[in-house]
Length: 364
Image (cartoon, rainbow, N blue to C red):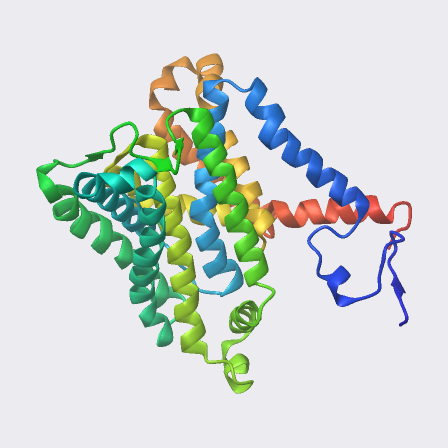
């Protein structure tokens, strides 16, 4: 078999090598070092504040994975994705509380919360698919309005006025200590939440990345590029659009379940419309059509807004009490700047930098 030598000196002899996640020894070493930093070095040196910021970044990644799948891979616009995260959070919380009261043996075995995560993914996926039905007939601006309706109908009406009042618990549900358990593993501290976040994020990225290599992923990309051409080639456009909404909703359900493990409470105020816009901004800034873009966008925006408070205290102390408004302004400015200067996002810029390093000193 003939081999094709790449400019970097690496060549592939079969399709297995060509589709491998880590294709060279250097990449293997780099990824092993990254895992060592994430699982050993960072937890050892990080304090409570650093862990809470890391958990917030991980939660953002989990929420934005579904948005990336819809917008970046399937070409379906969404502006109400946080509604499906809310569905997952409330499904997980209600199931965990009720089952722990009715079946203590599941609580003692630590199976209630893992089962609730699976149930939350299923319910959120089906609810997302319901609001994805109009995508069979409309797209663009009209689909934006449909997904916005999902936000207002789900959170502002159903959850706020009905689901949040189940059991006369008031507006929010409280999850007592010991409720969030994976078998013998009791999730209580920031460090335990951090390790749970890492596991969920890695599984989510691997799932989406491998799914895009299958026939389903190729069908989504074909629909994104030209849905008419995809239909002519035999792709069932309606079926794959609905499947995209289901998978994106299921990922949102997993993110909602993790939100319970972080805050131990769930209330409608956690899932406002601004959060849906935030997730779209994460995808736009990180890079559309790239799992790495989801990670980079979440890290960039979270750290950028986290720097607002100390910066304001140093430069403009009078605005320090208005941090939330300034954060919204910075978020909007970041979107505008990236759309003007780097519309393809951070992932594209990093890829260009890697290409430059690999090909240096050759101009091509």
